[in-house]
Image 1 (cartoon, rainbow, N blue to C red):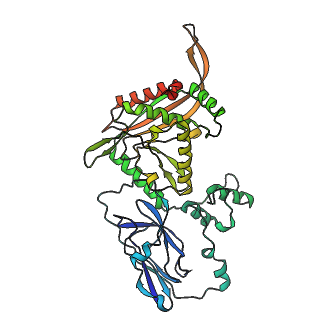
Image 2 (tube, rainbow, N blue to C red):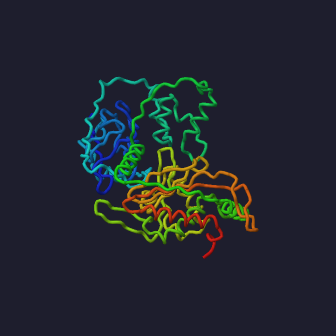
Length: 430
């Protein structure tokens, strides 16, 4: 019997540390060769660590949410025979790394923050034999269930074995699947029942989002501008295009808005830009690499529509659907989640009257369409007068970095977008 120390390998160029997001084993568990040890998150991706040996876990290198330096012990495994050695060879371990769920893009960390020291290994308690029956039914021995850390945490709190639940779609368990399971098994709390307080550790994607948003608000002097647009004609055009879409994807409002934004940006290059405030350089981009804020079980991600200005409405619709599905399933690549030059964020029917979105740093602007509402308006009657008619109205918000973008520029840009979407035939003109 000997000890095998698995050190956290080099998992990316320039990566000095990683965060422990999810443990798949605990002290006392038996793990097979190639079995999953833990998921760790870097600034670029979530990486799954696998065991090079078979044995029993006798120590772990930290708790979920802890930062661990590259080369520090992640786990110590008791092994038998010749498999024992002092530490896992870094090159051999690196070959086993599989990128599963890239994060939401460039992650900003405070410049003064020192690397977190590796947590001391948590040693095993004195060995105690576990009944064979208990080992056979332990959740650690179930096949891997695809689910986000948030879903796993909720299931654990409720005492639900995820292996008992069949996902509704895509093979990945979501909160809706948990809800359906609870409803079917009569586990809903009575309406109005008091719920116990809970403490949720901010780790993984949620921590990255918190850091990014705090850095954006701390470093960028935001200002927002909101304009009301009449989208009645745009909605009529969308309906006509969808009635004859054939094999092409159905259009939502989003590709039409993106087309209008791309048509307008060449006249406002200061908005399609990234600001390196440390170097004091603003890069105005010719191509529109449009970030699309997308809500997922793991948190907000921003997949990027590359060269959005070169895509027609149906190509935009297809790419929107593909990227949103990739982000929500956790299969989006790091390239798909980085490099945006301007971002659009939409809550669809939940959009509210107006929003003041936070800029996706180091970009300098973010656009937020809001909910469409029907209201009476005065419109021309065709005879030089006016009449009252029911119209579909939508507010468009924009937040800008006031160090780079003036209020006049932001207002002029949104007014230009408004002219396009209120005369939507221009979107189809060459």
